Image 1 (cartoon, helix red, strand yellow):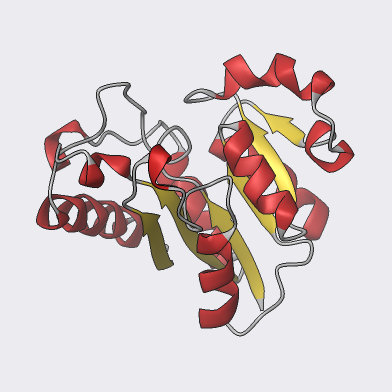
Image 2 (cartoon, helix red, strand yellow; image 1 turned 90 degrees about the horizontal axis):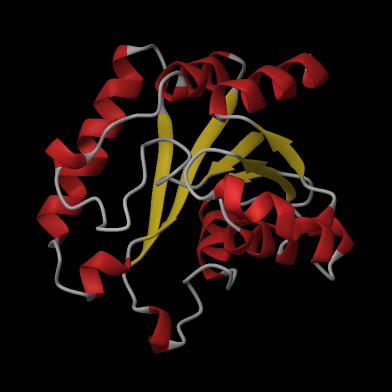
Length: 185
């Protein structure tokens, strides 16, 4: 099975410091929907792993989050792709849960549900937390300059974990998928 894991905010859709609280606020980054469709066409199972502390903060409810995710999936399907699963952490950063990235709990759930090892599975994110969670489970980290990624790029040189430090860096999801499909085909 070819599996790929994507963060959501800042990777698939535009991020906001005020949180994405509704379908109307959810705006795909140009080229991201088509990139997911290309991954699907290439035989990848695309899975999303996202921190959604806005739930714990009371900024939106589960119905709002499901509507956002349904809209995202519908757009991907309209482009000819498919999202095989969406995993989210609803907890606040102070709660100390095992599912909030950089903790690997979401990735553990993905590995269990898909009955697969995450060794060398590509994990694409826009933050050090994403990269650290992926590396914790031996994923291949990709950092995007979209979302918050550009602010983290300079920090990679100081990262103590060589695997995080050597993450592939791409401008956006479309360019990361271009690179990935070129190398894997």
